[in-house]
Length: 479
Ligand code: GLU
Image (cartoon, rainbow, N blue to C red; front, top):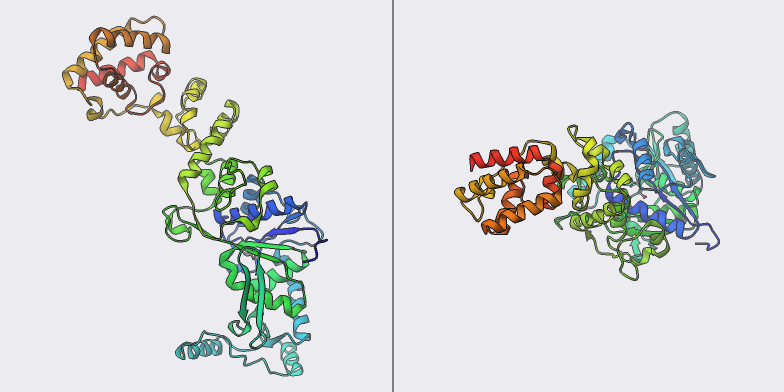
């Protein structure tokens, strides 16, 4: 690669659904590398397989990149010197390029019917050979082929793959990869509907858009030989290739996929992960900065990231670690910011006017924003108290008498705040020599239905005197 060229990386999603979190990890690396080198990050929409296109997917892809701060320098909406950046708007270009290859003797028109191709395939399978096109149309003369094309005969354009040639490329992460051209089919470049195949379009576009570095997932390695042969056929210089490992499912088994839960980047936001936290998690998945300090923002990542340092081994998408990072990012938010981000996670019956007193009690315990309901529901919803938990380390008589005395004491309080409740309750416990841990846990369970809550006395204060007394009365009656 000519080192004077501006570094350009790209993300080239197909609008066939939501952005996979693995693709977000790849986009992040492309973005960081472009920024680190004062280059451009390009967004290209690869929509040549129109049968798989999902309506609205392009808009959602653009939106999700923006949400994560991966703003493109060239691409849809913003344009750029080598647009358009949507492949279906570039069809004539692919045709032109493919015809150039026909002219130079590197590609040919193929008129074989689907039926014939299927028969050829079956024969190959019977002979236990990898199913490849038998090159039936490869030797049709130029004039004959042109005449048949002009007469409107249905056709595709195929690459004339050279025989028994050693072809190689250097993968930034994996080193030299060598393959023999005999393993590559005379692949279709232009389909009979005049649309390019992915292989042609990706090579033409990466060249036309002056992409210097192709960073993508390792699932594309098997396609790369086809791309290299195309670069050779055109006589173009290769970009730098780097294929990153895929993520493994959180249980460590197999490639992270839809079958084991939701995997779209959006689904993580819906589950209450902050974009900054998910991005930080993706940064350190299979890579770590020099000082091993794992919490970092995009700027530091850009400064330190080097694709060559990414682990070649697939790493587990460790949700525990993501939770840990998310908690750290939640704790970094100011109260106003946190309230804003929580807004879409609050259940409809959440008492907004009580937010200022409830939030400080639970903010520390939020792992994801979606935890807000579970952590706060006992403040405003009826609770269910489990008898076993209520009577734990005690017996019905003792619990009844503890609750009875507590109700009498709390009823007399003129002022209802944590300090005053605490003083009264502690005095009662000491006077009666109750076991503190049992008594306090029982008070917690009877007031909230839970064994883990924010600090007991603050919690009682916020639940409110009337509600606490009601709940204690209720538990006393059923104990
Ligand atoms: N359109 C491909 C995808 O959906 C792009 C692969 C590549 O980066 O070459 O992932």
